[in-house]
Image (cartoon, rainbow, N blue to C red; front, side, top):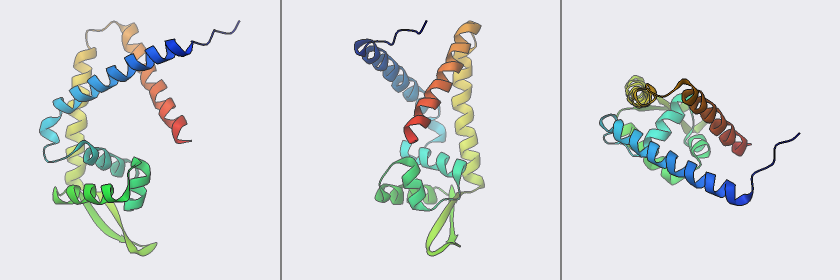
Length: 152
């Protein structure tokens, strides 16, 4: 027998609860890592992580992955460059363009940033029952799948 699909009201209520939990948790994680993000906006931190994960990238590729406009990326990369976290090199495929890559200082900053956030979450999960931790792990997988499905 197939499970009954939730009605629209139920889905909307769940979406609201989920969104609020994500917003509050994201805010708390930003607060926890504030010492590592000094001088950086949330957009800059996201771009730095994207470049680390997928780079080296052209600015246009950063804009596409981050789903922001090119002028936003230009400002963001300027900030990351001033902070000494990325390096630009000529793009061998297109001499008019540059590639951006995270340098050693940027990787170290991301390591510390991720470490602080992960440590916070691990502390919060430490006293949870194993079933709740399993549920959180499954929820993380589902959220990732929803995000990947959106990218198509």
